[in-house]
Image (cartoon, rainbow, N blue to C red; front, side, top):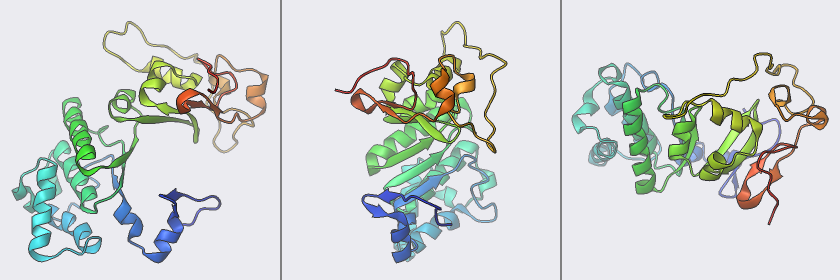
Length: 262
């Protein structure tokens, strides 16, 4: 569906215009890796068929060139070529996610959107997949849009972080700056609530704090009912982003670690 308002541009081009000119243009430039590695693969198709589809329709490959490229993709994600002739149910979660990554790479995209790509995996396998993603990013010059609820994972993979609450970005900054000096109280709550080895205790939120109603959003900041710093202006109107040094932005009237623009 077309958006009701606004637009999204990619390297200066409107996405709707790109699709109007070539319906495959967006698929060549942006690909996705999904949360559940097994269910994201067609259980009735061999991995060979799954990888062949984007190579045929988006890259126009066939014959020996197609087979060679599939073998290269399997090697890139550290899977043996003979795995091409297996079905998804024959793979572990980590192996299936590697296939999902290979499928995304088949289009030779500029951007890969990763939606909770390791949340369904064991911790040891998570580390392997994250290391693989880091290697592929360097090898192919990729940009990742990495979506996750796990702050330890976000900290490990992200150059720049955006924190969302109730559908709005409430803070964004370079990864290290956001973790060292968060400016939005919600970001601080997330960091204090995350289990960290060696950390003696976790912050417990007041049980009386209420979540906003998505069908009847509040007129002010959605986090105000839960925020220890909330004042009258917070419940009266939605705060815009307050820009700070080094593009550290926070949508908060009373931010933590306040800074002034240079």
